[in-house]
Image (tube, rainbow, N blue to C red; front, side):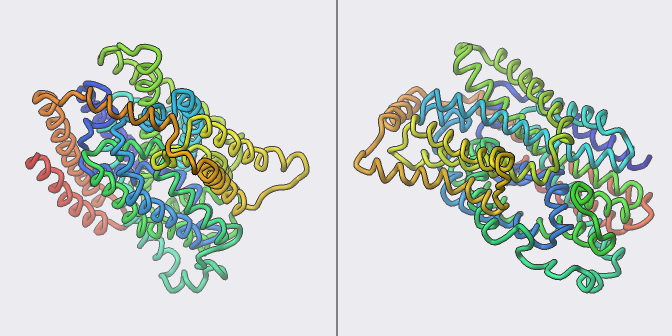
Length: 554
C-alpha cells in the first residue's frame, strides 16, 4: 500500500507541474521549442532523460542479466554518437533556422520527401513508444499486483495529459525531475543489492565466466561497431532529439546539449546495469521473456515498502519522458508541417494551439493501443533492436547527409530510403519465413546502417561533376527569403519568452524541493536505507538552489 501511495503522490504532483505550464504555450514556437531560448543544460538533461525509459531497464536489463557487462558496452555507443553529434550535427541543425526536422526536409528536399518521412516517422515513433509504455506498465503491474490492461490505459492517459497541456517546457521540467528521482532510486538500490549478494567480492566471484567481457554472446564487436554508427544517426538525426538542438539559442549551445548527454552516458549505464547483473548471482536461470523482469525482481527483493514505489516512479516517469517527447515532436510535425503547411496555412495561434493539443491526444491514444498489443508481438529486446536496425539508417541518414551535401536531391532521397527499407524488411521479415535464413544480430544491424550509407556515397561519386542540385539551389533561395522575411522579436515577445524561462527554472527549483521533502519523509518510514535516503534528500535540496539562482539572473 505504501508503494502505491508513493506512486500516486509523485504522479499527481508531476501532472500538476504540467498544468502549471498550460498558459505558457502562446504559439507554436513557445509550445514546441520553448521560444528557442531554452538553457542548454536543461536541454541536455532533457535529451538524456528522453533517450531512455523503462525499456532501458527491461531490454538492456535483460541483456545485463543474461550476458553481463556487454549491456554497458552497448550503451557506451550512445556516448560516441552524442560526441559526433555535438561536433558536427547539432550545430548544423540549429543553423538551419527551422523549428522541426520535417520543416528542414521540406525546404531542402521537397514536400514529397517530407510527406513520406512524416508518415513513416509517425508510425515508427508511435510503435516504439507504445512498446515502451508496455514495458513500464508491465513493471508497475507486476510490482503492485494490478491488472496489466487498466495500468497501461491509466499510465498512457497520464502521459498524454501532461504533454497536451504543457508543451515542451512542461516535458523538459518533468525530464529534470525524472532524472533526480531515478538517480536517487538507483543510488539507493545499489548498496542494498550488494549487501543482498554478500558484498562486491562475492558478486565478482559468483558471476558466470565471461560476465565482465566487453562483448558476449550474439553481441559481438561487429554488432557494437554497427550500433555505434546507428547511434550517430539516431542521436544526430532523430526528430525528437533535433528538437532539443533547435530549441536553444545558438549553434554552440546546441553542441553543449549533445556534449552533456555524452558525459552523462559514460557513468550512468554502469549504475543502471549493476542491479540486474547482480541478480544473476542471486537468482540464476531466467531466460526469454522472464529475463525482462530481472530488474523489477531484484528491486522487489531488496527494496523496502516506499522505496520500491520510488523506483517504480522513476522507471515510469523516465518512460514518460521518452513518450512525452515523442508525442510532443509528432504533434509538432503534424501541426506545423501538415496542418499549417498544407491544410490551413493562415490559421491563427489559437487555432494552431487547439490542433497541437488535440493531435497529442489522438496520437497518444494510438500509442496506448500499440502498447496493449505488444504482448502479442514478442519480446521487447527483439522488437527494439529490430525496429532500430530496419528503420534507423534509411530514415535518419539521408536528412543528415543533406545537411552537408549540395548534390543530394529529393528524388534520390526517396529512392535510397525506400530501397534500403525494402532490403532490410526482406532480410528481417521475409527471408526467415521463405527459406529459414536469418541474419545474425551483428549483420542485421550492419546491413541497416551501412546499406543506406553506401548508397549515398555511391550517389555522391556518380554526381561528382554536378556542383549543386536544383533542390539545393531552391533551398538557398528559401533561406534567403526566410532571412529577409524574418521579423525581429518585439520587446513584448522577448519579455514573454524571458518570463516563460524564469517560470520554468522556478518550477524546477520548487519541484526539486518538493521531491526532497517527500524523500525525507520516506527516510523516516522505510525499514532500511533511511540514512542514505535522508542524505540524498539533503543533496537535492542543495541542488534546488541552482535553478532558483539561475532564475534570479534571468
